[in-house]
Length: 126
Image 1 (cartoon, rainbow, N blue to C red):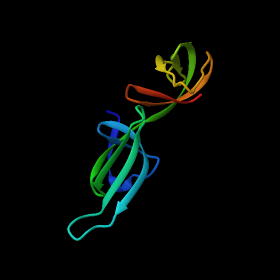
Image 2 (cartoon, rainbow, N blue to C red):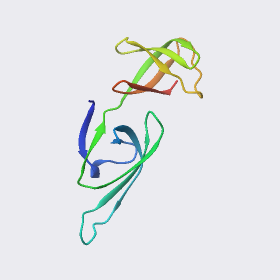
Image 3 (cartoon, rainbow, N blue to C red):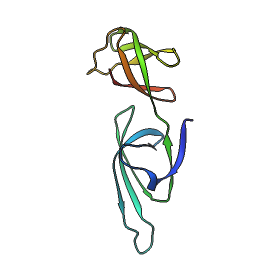
Image 4 (tube, one colour):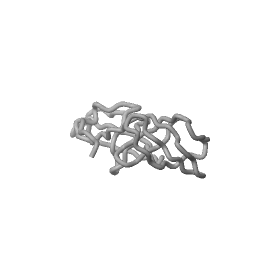
């Protein structure tokens, strides 16, 4: 799997973290002071990169968590068919089919930017 392990204290807003085996982008990160009988705790609110669901995580700051390695890549639209587009990666020249969000209008030969984690892909910009 394309992920690495790190401590919770090293995370910050805008970075990625695995919550419930799903790559999520951190929206907010806050810490609470250590109490009388425990260590400092961190609360993370995040949104799933590929499914858009909100998730939260509360862990001690010295706990280990998985951080997904999400790649930002460039592609070119080969053809479109309704809500699907056939895209060619501009680095590897691999072609694959992606779901196109409703708010993005693509035409053949358009260049796009997309996120990829393992076999999941999402268009971020056209």
